[in-house]
Structures are given as structure tokens and as C-alpha cells.
Figure 1: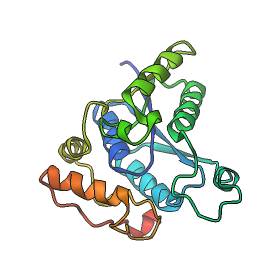
Figure 2: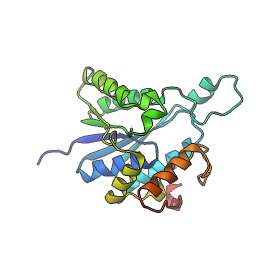
Figure 3: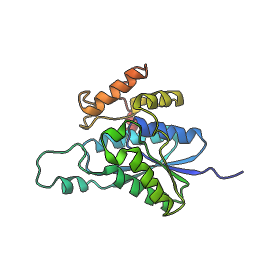
Length: 210
């Protein structure tokens, strides 16, 4: 019997990467995940959610501690940025690709969607195509974005079909123990569940997840 392919997922603890983990597990892949703490405010809560999702799917989680990047990029600005790292997808995908090569993985999955390009150039379809072309010239890992043609509501529907427990995902920019419900990411999440015709579940993690 052939060995299952090894898939590495860039995991942020959110709706998209939870769906990717379930997609890979449903395909029968051997699944790993990598989480990056780059000094973002919600890093601790995102990490908790990513760990919970990996338990749900049997994925092995590798956590990379780059938290010192946050203060370094913030400089003398007293305002704590929600996302301190410019072009974070470039950094995350590059590190994910390097780890995938080290682990001899067959593919790297990233959670970009059709909606993301409007807010970040490093999340656009054009950027992804360029990065994938670069990766093709570097090694054998296939970089894929299975959700790139889907809006967030479509991702919610797909995840629901796969049995994702969205109560174990985290999207808030502020990093509170309970999502604030007011930041841009919380609004986008609520709108996606409404558009998908589903009730947005409360954020709940079991004691063993903390």
C-alpha cells in the first residue's frame, strides 16, 4: 500500500485554515500544520485555536516563535498594531515552504480566499501565482491554495460540510479570551456565516485545549 502524501497546512486558527486541515484529512493525507507567532496581538488565542483544530484532525502542529518581530517592526510607535508585519503572507509562505522542504512534504496548503486580495497584495491571486512559480523552481513541494476561488461564506459552507467545529476557530484581531465582535475580522466572520445561512457559533474551547 502506498504511503499517504504528506501535506503541511499554514494554520492561523481561523475559519479558512480549519477548513484546509479538514480537507487534507478527508483526502487521507498525513497532515502537519505550522503556526507562526510574529508578534500579532491575537497570537495566543490563534495558537489555542490552531492546537484545537489539529487535535480534531490528527494533525501534528509545529509552532514557530517569531514574536520579537512585532516590537522590532513597531519601533517607537506606542500603538500596538494588530498585525505588525507588512507582507505577512510572503513571510509565512516562505517559512512554510522551507519547513515543508525540510520535512519532505508533498504540498503546502495556504488559506487564501477570493476576498483576501482586496485588503492585501500579498493575499491576491496574482501574488499567489508568482509565489507558486517561485516555489516550483526551488524544489518539489507543490504550493496550493484550494480556497482561492471561494469567498468567505463559501468557505464556511465547505467547512460545515466537512464537519468543522467553527466554535474552535478564532478570528478576532484584538486577542481577547472572547472575540470582541466589533473589529473588522469579527464583522467579516459574522457576515460570512449570515451569507452562508448558518448560525455563527460561540467561541468555545475545552479545558484541555488551553
